[in-house]
Image 1: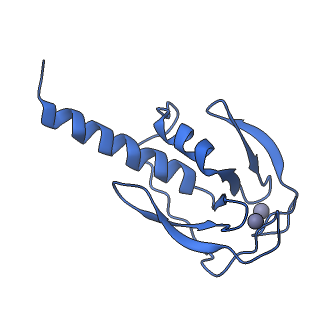
Image 2 (image 1 turned 45 degrees about the horizontal axis):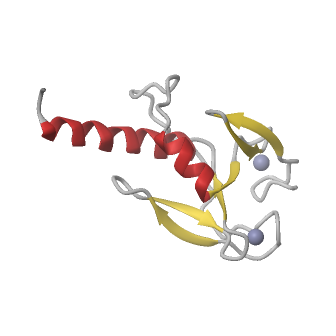
Length: 122
Ligand SMILES: [Zn+2]
Ligand SMILES: [Zn+2]
């Protein structure tokens, strides 16, 4: 499958024990929603929270689904700090640019921590 962003060839990789497709050239990822939910709930051990993802030259135009070739929809994802992501309405796959997957994970972890804080110490 071809990368919808830079036309590189997508490769299957393991991310947090979940198989997803990633572009070796631009580090964009293609995955389905159950996989994204699984990754989101996994604590990212290697993610530095102080690391800021300043993506330069971020492309925000319409993307074509690498699987079925139709234009992907922009949808909001995430409960705590929603991100705009690209989703194919036909085959239900999600495209994330470099850094967006980590952003979603970090946002979820922060949400999780805040939830624990309101419960107070045991
Ligand atoms: Zn690419
Ligand atoms: Zn599709």
